[in-house]
Image 1 (tube, rainbow, N blue to C red):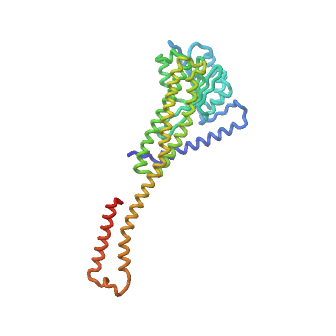
Image 2 (cartoon, rainbow, N blue to C red):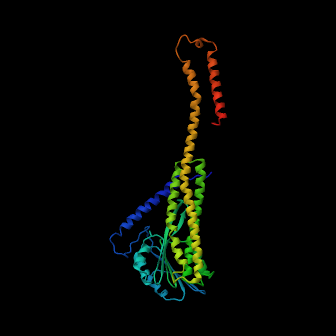
Image 3 (cartoon, rainbow, N blue to C red):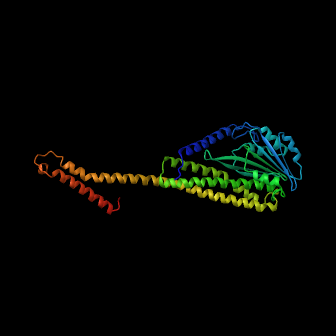
Length: 373
């Protein structure tokens, strides 16, 4: 039978507390600053910002990495579709240059570098801004690692801002390089759909990992609940709350995209956004089911602990009940009266032992008939 170790619960639970406290401190640094002031809120980074560009049409694909944001000006006016991926948000001056080239509002820039945003969408006249969470699972710590992804969707370009290098978008890049599928024949709206679909699909991988932990925990609750089990339940409840904060608001974003309210989303792409919206609803329903299961686990844990305590008390009660008549016999014949005839009887001692055994056997048989043991 699998068991969840104590280190898993403690090591996974503690970083989440530190992360919340640090984010609150970072938010406090913005107090009193004018709106639109760029202050990076998120994990500290030492590596420079990495900018990768994929410019493609149905017949060609150009991919390169650039170091100077000014080189992006050549992609402002183009008949092709351009995907600009930015890894790293700590260098706010570089982020400001990129956003300035594409005339992105200062408040949007502020949301990009603030990685504690709630999933949302802003519809501007020339672009759509979408911010959401992508989730990865750390196998060593057995913990969910969040990362904010911000998308700026224009008429012929998509800019994706990520906190750290590495993502789940490599299959999309492979399709673009190989000219496979609809993505090369469509515009920036379909590219945005592909990115969103990849992120939502990754949610199901996280839910599958949590389902495995829940299944193991259910077996442990029934067979061998312990204090470690209670800690793991608390950790799972925390994960479910975090998942809800990350996935639930995304429904509103995808609902707006699927409704065709934006002129930047073509009618031919709307069915695809409706499809990823359905996937999000499915993920939310699955998450809510798991959350109800985890919430009920605390009651199961308390019931299991009470049952174990009742079994222990039952055994102790039976033992005490068996010794009660034996204690009476030994106490009765332990009196120091001189005229007790049994004290001088030759067979007195064996007779007391026989009576004790007979009483004990009779009581055990009676308990058995009553199905108390």
